[in-house]
Image (cartoon, rainbow, N blue to C red; front, side):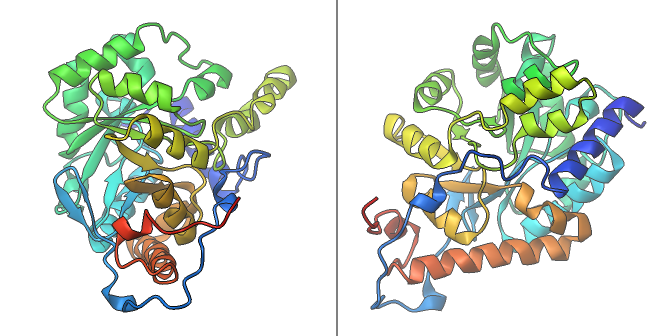
Length: 344
């Protein structure tokens, strides 16, 4: 079954706008460029022996990367997610799917089924539902369906209040979301990951989410794709468009969000995403306190082409991370997290 035309068109418009970088390059910076490593001219390590591996959800990843949630529910999204699953398996990294709302409601699977697990049998696979659905009638049954339909190891609950506020017809009833997340965490057999979509999560909120039973926080900070700017491109009403654009630079810069969550939640599993352009940004995110680094928009054009193209993209990011380790004298990620920085 295909999703309704309006939802299908909206999802495809989102993809087109992200690919065209409409909504990227907004006035807010991720903050990564301000982080500069002290160069080590005598690394005393072998480049090829550098260990980029990381643990996540009981898996050993070959590199500390999560292919972040992009899209779901349409035929085009099915092709992209299939390519990303192939790339994740090839590179030994984790994959998070886009929203499963359409699939769970039976309005079109869009490739969000067991074929993803078949394509990526040895890496972590994360399902995805929206926080807004948790106060609109959804509960443990729908969440379990999202997990089971793709064989997920964890479930992301994405937090996107800004996008919903500016999007025509967006979900704006959010009272009781935290309590719903707590109930869900207690009911599910898989871990819950809380994720923003481009406006960041503060250390203060991360603490509340962890206390509610969430096991990992993906800060998804400001500095990458602005969903307020993306939605503005779709709004025909000049006043609504102006209101959306007003918030194009809203949010906590990713570098600041990572550092704040790590400082206030030292025990948390922290995923750093939002404006991660390359492997040097990945190194910066890890140095600031991320356990894993997520990337979405920067890999989308490769994911549209093929699984091989997506794999080449993430292999390049891993190579750039390895160079960062080599030039800081870091034999592994633990050492990179202690690498000296230049004064700000």
